[in-house]
Length: 82
Image 1 (cartoon, one colour):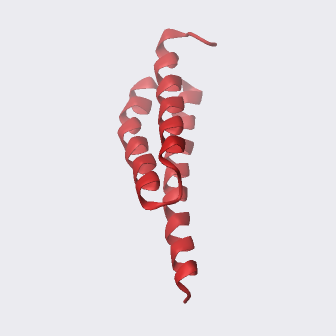
Image 2 (cartoon, helix red, strand yellow; image 1 turned 30 degrees about the vertical axis):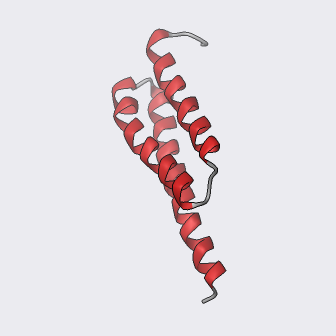
């Protein structure tokens, strides 16, 4: 297996791990379960930071992802932006 194929597979796993967390978070936000969404945020932060540190994402993209989902979870309880 070529080195580039190994790296691609490794990067893909990291991106998919982040996407799985985001999909789960979207489900909680859709039903309005703020407690479970907040409990999932540390997992999202970890996956985004890992993707930024290990290659698939630039650190600014990871920051945008984290900020976006933090904002959505925080708006859930306040009703702002709905």
